[in-house]
Length: 271
Length: 275
Image 1: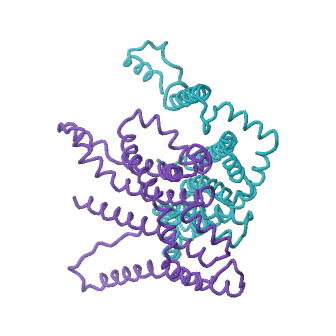
Image 2: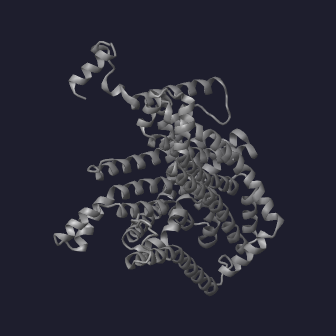
């Protein structure tokens, strides 16, 4: 905002310029932070005043989380979760982008796979869990398979849509200037598909985390989901909320990072 | 999307038109035939693989189809489906009844939008399953807990598309309605609700998939009733053909509901264009 418009704004609102909130405190982020902090404080006060079995005070949850980190419980659960998660997500990303590009490039591949991919976007993939347990047993393999079922359709669909929506006129122009198909694909199609591919990776990340937690909850042997199930069994709300807190923080960090990357690769896009 | 040639009956005899039509018919066949072909090929591979491996955990395709036929005739299957679906109907219904108006209101009331936006985005991103234990500790192991879990799973995915649908309605339409002195009620009836109907159905479609996900997660983990209970018992008995058949039945149920919503969406969008 330029100096001139900000002066105009403050005049319009009838407030002397010196009384305006600093820039960081204006806008929706500030409102959200204030609302969040206030409701957390209210929650803290409420839960300290009234004892609710399923809702311990936020401060106790944070303390418990730190404690679980120190005694090695959470690091162990994370250690059990990360390899399967990375494997599942990597398979989804590599396979998903490859399939999506094939669908975007070859008509017959698109016709063959599109109904299945669209179904995969909305159908409950967790229904396949019993099948995976039958095939892979109570192992990491089942978790990896569930993650792939959760995440891959979104990555495939976005990669395919990205290729499909890439700038056709630009491709045609490059072609008439004698660019080879490979060059056109590499320098035009791929670049213009990138924002949607990135969005797919972000969506796939959230889906992969959901799949991992769901799979671990059902398997109840290891990982964050397994830990959560133990706390559910012992009616330990603090412990369960600690696991939830860690999961949410990890999910938010991963998604925020991918969002940042998405903005970087789509800097030229109008949207 | 492919460019669809404009249909013209006047020049049906012209070769170019006939060619185009043939191409279109061929494409329609490819669109249906190729996925079916893939399914057949995969089923064949599965059959051969399972017969070669010959393991108890991997029934053949034919065994699973037979089991599905048998299961569909059993009272136990329908009872389990009934028990599970009562919770789905209640939880999903509640999510729809609350989520659709909430999405609409968020699109219309700026304050609500800025208050709820952050939490809605977080709710979309985080795995809802992590708060499952809290619901159980709060409500116990009964129907209320199951309904709550399904409700929580479905809600964000209903609200967000509805709110997005509100954003697609052009501001000019509002302005015009206002300058002609339309009341708020009229704006809702004639602009907002018809305009967001496709988005609402999209939301319901997505929400239903998540509702079933929530139902399965809770029944397979902490409250063993209905389908989850039956699946766990089948697993204990190593009755793998029926497990696979059950999985197929659950997916078929989602497919039917989501497909019906999709058809409704297409009908409504087509109807909207004609008006």
